[in-house]
Length: 171
Image: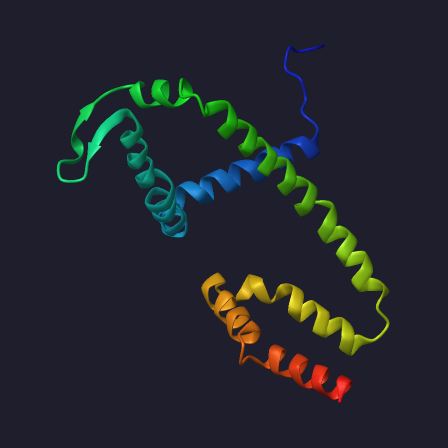
């Protein structure tokens, strides 16, 4: 005699039971999950959603004294003015050029550089080259510009070395 009830295989019942047990555990310990998620949610709200209030400035005639909320709403006035300006096409082309140059310089060059660094046999030379190449990533641009300025100044070490080398070669 056949009944209308299908028999579920044991493996599928164990899998469903495991999912059920997980859901029950999460429901019973929801405070723990909220505690774990709270820092991520707070940081997301602070650094992703609160700055979006600044986007309102683009649609308002912003006055710093009045603030964002009290400034007059102008809608797309600023966009229309920018898009209808005679220099818009020039700005657009320059932006596209910079993006393309960034892709051309930022994508294949580091890969080629990695291949070239891999070909250096001397570990000491390789580490020094890597240090020079990665140094700008770890030092502020202001500090880096100051270092270059000091190194290349009239009394800096590079010019002193070149001056001595030039005098030594001709004398």
